[in-house]
Length: 168
Image (cartoon, rainbow, N blue to C red; front, side, top):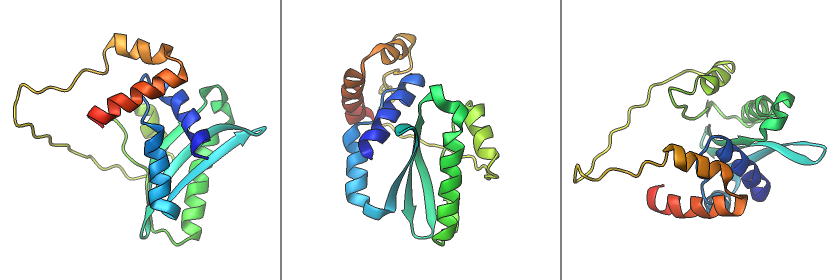
């Protein structure tokens, strides 16, 4: 199931013009966390069209990753998967579901989560650097985003492995 999830992740990360996390990251999550990690996959005619990965700890579940084929968004697979997460969590005694972070400028994702009755909470990040001259590389430049959109899956995945080794 990790491979099907990862293929959808590549589609989503390309659409968002972002490098993908390494496939090994997800394989390690599944191997190390066992039944505390769950990948839910929606298919249409046997073909994966959307997936979400969630983590469970105690009486809480955290939605961590979601991916989908945008050509089939009209089938509402992501809302279906979230509804299944809610139903299955409730049936197993889960008391809290964390729908994960959303960038403040991602109004669509925020609206999607709001429709499930989520409660927003502002997260503030603080970073410490020993030297002020250390600035992270700007991976959001126009040229980089265009490169992400054009790379074949294998190359995109390889670049993601390198980038996340140094930045993730």
